[in-house]
Amino acid sequence: MGKTTSSRGNVASKTLTDKVAKLCFEKLTRAEVAEALGISEMSVSNARSNAIRRYGTDLPRFRKQPLNYVRCSIGLETRLKLDEEAKKRSTTPYRLAASILTAVLKDDLINAVLDDGEDDEVANN
Image 1: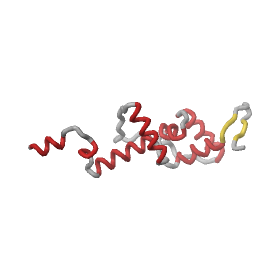
Image 2: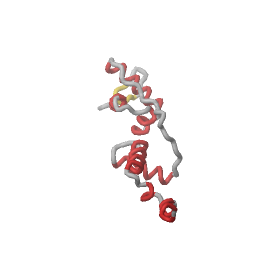
Image 3: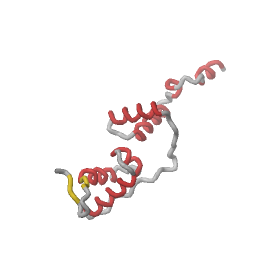
Image 4: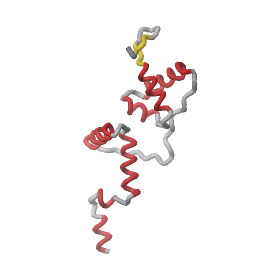
């Protein structure tokens, strides 16, 4: 029932448009919205345009990556675990990774998390 048919005969989900419209207000990037909803960035843009037409209002633009944005590569197993944990917490893997990194650095837990011998070198000097 939550679907309507356009003049072209395509089936469009009202819920997708609504979800994208809601996420526009959360100051996410287009990539974060796409990942959260499991759709392409182009689909996110199309749904945002549909929401603007549907509601007759302008939605906030997607957030651009900030200057302090850090990108890193992780292994497949790590990524799958990150995805699993993010899903449990109803967040995106990007936000979870940022939260983990922030907590580790804020609470000075690097030595507790990593076993790279740094702590041993400090103790021996």
